Image 1 (cartoon, rainbow, N blue to C red):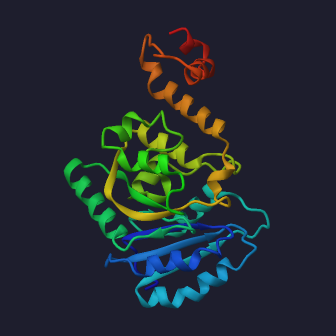
Image 2: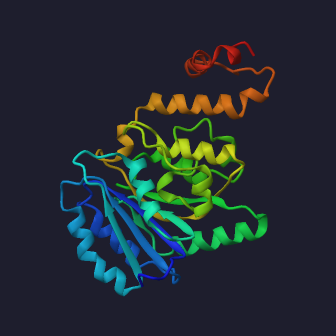
Length: 280
């Protein structure tokens, strides 16, 4: 077990997730995927029983052939989600990376279907792809409008709406990709907890001609709660990242453009642009 390289590494950052970990790890244990699998889990200064729970699951997971690679930082202060993901990836060996938040639950076929899709797209295009999937929310009905929007995007809209959304058009907890995608677009930003590291990575991937794909099945239960790291990110920080990406990847190529039917959002967009782009 310890000397084998995995085909898929499940990447899980953990900070005080003891209320959710049993269900999350159970969803990993019962995956239908039958290839080489490992869990690389990084503890970011948890003060609860998170790592004791991980230890209690280790024998069950490894008896199923899932190698467990725990690591942690030695400080008392959390260093953030971006840092934790980077550390977990560095400790892992898999060709493919499956991202799993410590409070989410994978549906039984998630890894199998996303892995097969990744291989199929590479065979067809010769490019590695960032792959997501549809998801359900827990509690059911929370962020209902956002969930319906995410789950309804077609392949073209994954690209065309990348600068209009308050986050990536493929939500980060559903991401699955070849390691080369991470090596090309990463690592994750390790700035303070208010940094949208997933959105920055997403735009880096697109800027390098990266492909996007969403598996049109609900393969993850995405929890909504006030302790989530998502709530640490200010919406205007996300707005700033979107505007910078729009200028860098789109507006710099245009001689002129119109902000059509400009209401409050349109005026805010205009004021957020660099002077050179306002003049266009």
